[in-house]
Amino acid sequence: MRIGVLGAGQLGRMLALAGLPLGLEFRFFDTTAEAPAGQLAELQVGSYDDPTALAGFAEGCDCITYEFENVPVGATRFLAERVPVYPPPQALEVAQDRVVEKTFLGGLGLPTPVFYPVLSKNDLLDGLERTGLPAVLKTRTLGYDGKGQRVLREQADIDPAWTALGGQPLILEGWVPFEREVSSLAVRSRSGETAFYPLVENTHREGILRQSWAPAPALSPELQAQAEAYTLRVLERLEYVGVLAIEWFQVGGQLLANEMAPRVHNSGHWTIEGAETSQFENHLRALLGWPLGASLSRGHAAMLNLIGQQPEAARVLAVPGAHLHWYGKALKPGRKVGHITVRADSAEVLAERVAAVGALL
View 1: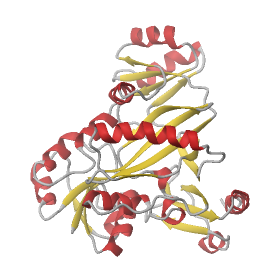
View 2: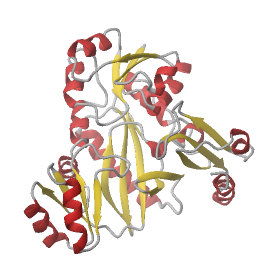
View 3: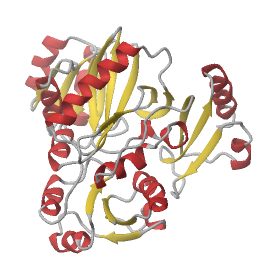
């Protein structure tokens, strides 16, 4: 079986690392020859708007998936006429536009922050009359890792934010005084079989995910059930196949949907060592219609992203329960170049081990 993957970054690389032991073959499509997944499997370099290149890529693939959500929807629809594409292009279309996404989620009964489409400065001022300050102004498309957004804390922030982001479709979101950010990870197979991983607590800095803790500390059965019920609505409405991540704001006992990612996700990297079956293996099982693996956590785990830094491997691995993952990328400031997962049988021991790893970073 050959899996085609659009994008050949670290997520694609980890898909291959999960699938090669299962006897699967991989073919990647990317716009650059330096993409790290190309170190493990066939890499075709081309443009997403080149139908000849896409058709050649699809030839011989049993199914196609993607590892980032900014793949042009038109490319996935073109490929879906030739080979099954999972998750379905419709999911990609929803996730690529924040207004479409929040409208879709709200239509399914998922609570979201208050939001307003912004096409002009008057739209922005009208929206602020309703949301008040603080608020968040974001691009509707192509935002990731905190890019393409500005926090409006006071009147003086409005003009600079408009200068930076104006001239393109935007979304204004009301500020959410959340207690913490959590994310859910679910997987649905072609057969309709579904599995849910425990909610994780995430810490971001400068818009980039820094740490994920699994299961989320003090996670109640009620909050887990709420996340699963909401996520199931999304999976079923989209006839989804593969892994789906949803990022949430927790306010008391209520979850507000922030955004969804129709792919394997950074906040799920802990599952490689910390769950019975990793998100990457379960994504592949789902695409192929194979039985899903158990999504239970193996004790407690934390994932620490390595952002533009390279700690000494031997020192990291000297910490009990620590596992190091390099992505095969050149070091650059602000770039995700790897991650460390730390596992323990108790939350207390995990905290001690994470502190020991953190001292090396």
